[in-house]
Length: 77
Image (cartoon, rainbow, N blue to C red):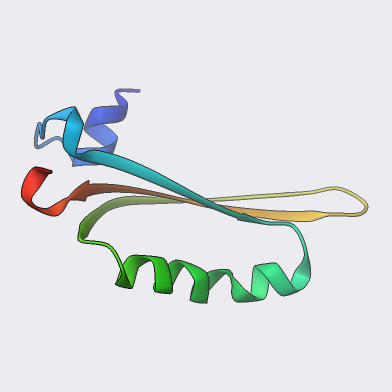
């Protein structure tokens, strides 16, 4: 998989303007608050989101949630 293609949607933006942010939670309260945490982070950024990947995992004790956001910095900076 070409990560630059995934992050840019194939538009060929220079790699200096690409970014990825990973949010994770394993506790119930953290998982419930994760949407607000992501919304707050996005509100403070000047980015265009190009891809979002949600990953879930669990075992007998923990239920993990990871949300990975690929983005392009606005203005290419």
